[in-house]
Length: 63
Image (cartoon, rainbow, N blue to C red; front, top):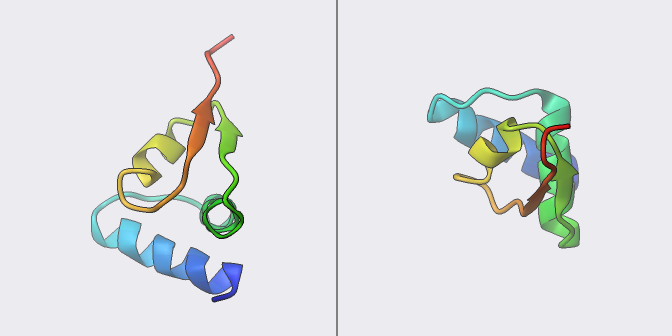
């Protein structure tokens, strides 16, 4: 499956459960899941996405 198709599936799944995110965020999640690399972020939204989609993240502490 192409990353943009997976991103659309992630978007629809999260949206159906009340979790909103941008198209770009879900494309990042899809690339992370497909390529097996974590997302390095301060954005708390990725923690919410990780509850439903197989994205791994490294959370940075707030500066």
